[in-house]
Amino acid sequence: MLSLFTGQASYSQDARPEFNVYAVSTAASQCQMAYGAGSVRVIVTRNGQVVWDSAGCKPPGAKTVTFQRGVPQLLTISWNRRATSPSGCAGSLPAGAWGTFQAVAMITGQTSPVRAFTLLR
Image 1: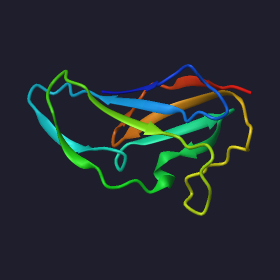
Image 2: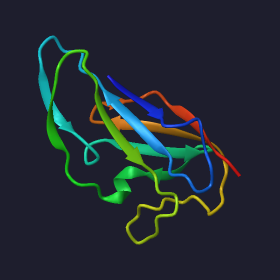
Image 3: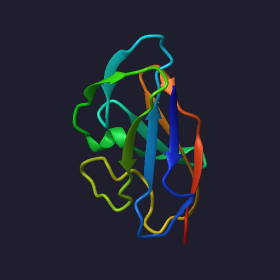
């Protein structure tokens, strides 16, 4: 099971939004899978348009993690809204953009519920 939470409900113009991604196994016995910035994607949208995808930041490969049933594993991914190209990490958010955004986490076969957050003016 995959969940995503924002570190705050809203962020000032100079703050970096943080996304806390929790993965919990529901399997009867322990299992292993790659879990980290290299295997989990966080996608931020605004009005249905993708403005940032963490996969564009070329994160390092994920380490294999052992999951115990019901014990969450936490991964925190932050979004540097002022990142620059050519890394592809900047996304398409215009400088000074504000309003309500949505974020979702994805890993092979799993998608978290969508979470809304606000960028302040």
